[in-house]
Amino acid sequence: MLNKRLMALALAALPATDHAASNPWLPEPGTLNTAISYVFQSADRFYFGNQLVDLPADREQHTVGAYLEYGLTDSIALDAFVGYSATDFTETGPGGSAPFGAGLDGLTDTNLGIRWRALDELTGAPVSLTFRAAGIIEGSYRTGALNAVGDGSSGGEFSALAGRYFENGASLSGEFGYRTRSRPVPDEFFANLRAGYAITSKWGVGISYQVAESLGGIDIGAPGFSFARFPETNEDAQIFGLDLSYRVTPKASVSVNWGKNLTGRNTTSQDIVGINFGYSFY
Image 1 (cartoon, helix red, strand yellow):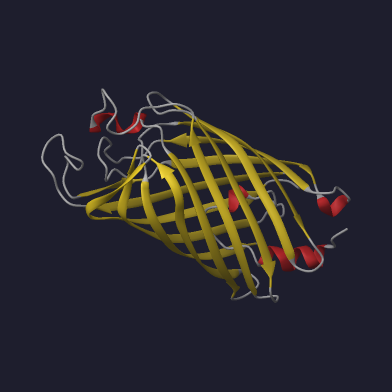
Image 2 (cartoon, one colour):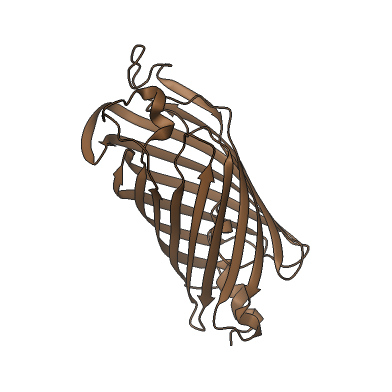
């Protein structure tokens, strides 16, 4: 069984990102973990349906976000994410891929969640097992364009999260969930997998794989499609990622992340770079 000292060492290797809600480990009761993140996404190709096509110009997106999580009890934690995002693309006329202009921006969708830990590896369970439910509040951006920030729809998501730390500093975790939003956005299945390793008490590395699969929707370019129907598209994505984290002090950390689309459907073929600053209050 992993002791608390080794668990603390392993937790120090986790990147301070807005994806912290995607792991099964909860903050201690009364602890508030915070993170500020900046993410840059760039794409010069786009999947129109399953066909990968060159874009006339790079589609770029800048997002600044804030993540909070608070430990209510040993087995319950609250989490929240809110951000602001701006995109840049080539301008087109009405009915084109960017009918509202080259740049769009606005508040991202807000995510408010609660996690309940059913099993704890520190008390003899083979893994830590947590269940999460969250509400999604649509952002303030415009939709109906290739350079839109998001789909513009509220809803909810439900997931199961499992993970385990090992005596040698390695960790494995996974999340499997279902997301539903108001029409016309299709429901989707999502999963997040990560393997991490605490090199020292300060340095940690990780590798991740994320997948999202829409359960229905229309393809871009299919009969009846128009850019106003962008939120209705059957959007799939698989993203491979790497992260490097450093524990500056017992309470402060910084991490850098890189990701790339492996394949997709009705989405960008993009590179993703992020930097995150985390701080804990306890």
